[in-house]
Amino acid sequence: MKHKIPDMTYSEIENAINERIIGKNAQRDREVLKGRLLDGLTFEALAEKHDLSVRQIYNIVYRCESKIFR
Image 1 (cartoon, rainbow, N blue to C red):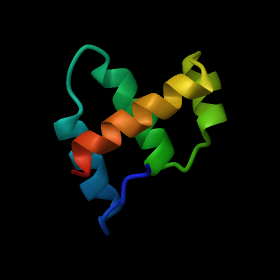
Image 2: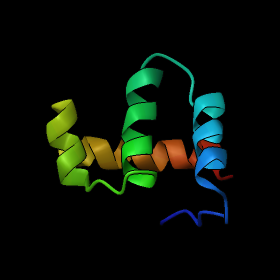
Image 3: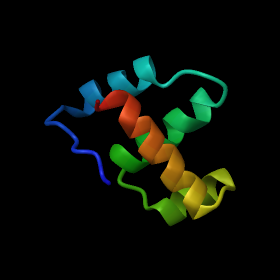
Image 4: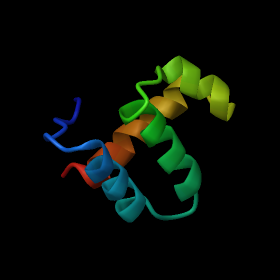
């Protein structure tokens, strides 16, 4: 299930990511989510950039979207 992303400005999304994505891998997760939502990178490009599988990137994006768009 894909999360519905509300109408937010670039800076509002960036602030939400910075404020709500915390924890063990927060820096990586923020970079992945910003790459996907703000820069429009594909899951494949993000996987290559972060040396992760496409599935791992998908899981990070889905989990993080849940945190910021609930």
